[in-house]
Image 1 (tube, rainbow, N blue to C red):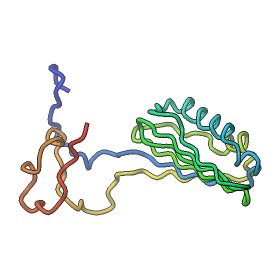
Image 2: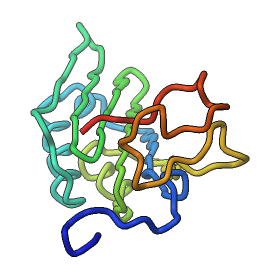
Image 3: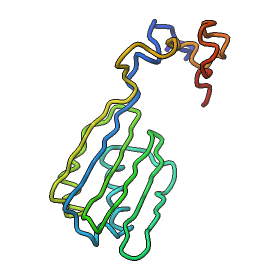
Image 4: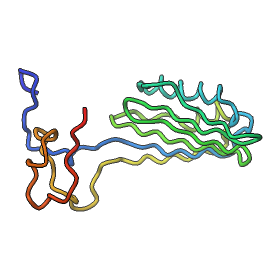
Length: 166
């Protein structure tokens, strides 16, 4: 940032930045009644949010399947989202947390054992936004990321315009 609050060009592009981390969590051997409890899952979501310092933009949305079915829940965060899908008939819960800012590791196995009775928890952490090969379109300089298509080289005319949202 400059003294006036504007961005200063550093030569870095949006493609140089890590855009977030996604935690994909599978919990096996869970108590079926815990997997049917919106109240219990709501407390779990609240604990995740609180302990990781996340910022909900609304209340969680829950869909409860009929009979002995499970629950699907999602919480929109300013950092992205937290979602869960439960399968009481299999004692299984799937969680997905995407966070577009650096965040500490969370003790998923310990917390899910406590909240759901999970016997086994598998956590995969996936960095998002990293390139494994050459970019598919020209990098966008940080100081022109809000620019129009005219800032792009002619060869990118068939590509979508850079992000211009808030």
